[in-house]
Length: 408
View 1 (spheres, helix red, strand yellow):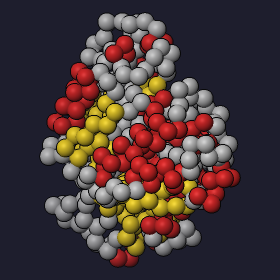
View 2 (cartoon, helix red, strand yellow):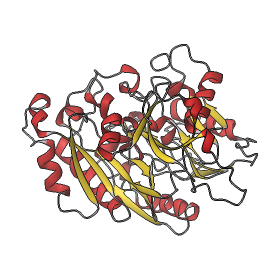
View 3 (cartoon, one colour):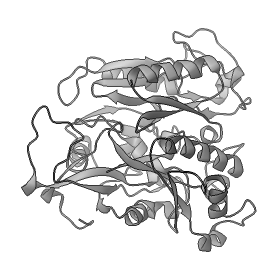
């Protein structure tokens, strides 16, 4: 299969993230991607970021293979001045001896946000050979299927940054991993879609139906694309907020499928609930859209409110309110975060791996423990591995944003 193959000849299916992985793709950040950007992140530090990303990779490597993609050293001189060491040198220093970590070099990698720049992996089956599965057959069984990488034509989150080689990373990753690729007929990022593996997809309109990615494409057309490329039977749309952040409000920091019919929803920290705005409006919109909602198979969707938080805004650090209906972390006790930090601190931005869930902790012991307990109840039998985040949050992302699963 290649990018010229007609969709009409194949059916596609994206499994749930909790299905068995062959491994996880990650990307090692160049110096430029952290320090030279149109989106300013005060406090960003390339060395600290690389150490933090290495900790995430090592946590994942306890359970499955990590494929780490690093800028080819022959191209580093074109990208950075090298004062912090080349990408390959630093990757080898922190991960070179690690078990279950393979370092690949490519010209086509820049930022660490592999969820958005890497391919989205799916199973493809020729229609002529498609076998009907019995109702008792597992979703993870894909007879006569091959794994393909869906190329979503990353365009710097709606052209918010200048073009980089990240736009070519998905194809490069497929080539290096020897996976056939298929070009999707729309522009999106992996963090902008959330599937249950059983026909249902969650997405925000702001990150998908946006003129900076898919001008002139309406809901019905996009839903047909989702059906043809992802095997999705039902899309549940949330409004989102265009321009809210660089991603235009990706769904993977808001709501995640713990299993078909079960959605984990995070609630943001806000200073004043009588004048919520922003993230809390987002939260209520998601709750409203999921109320009395069913999934593609007709199951009622059960919403579990994580007693955690999605984002802490600059204003949230300027005053503390005790008037919360949901137990929230206290920004005053968060490690390493000072006033006016304006960081992303999302517990639902976790990554499911074989036998474990990799989730952030931020330094509020009560909130961190509570998030781990919520996930343990929803993912029985899996170890809950918590990794301290700071730099990823400063730069607007989390663990899920930095990872992309691929299937056997």
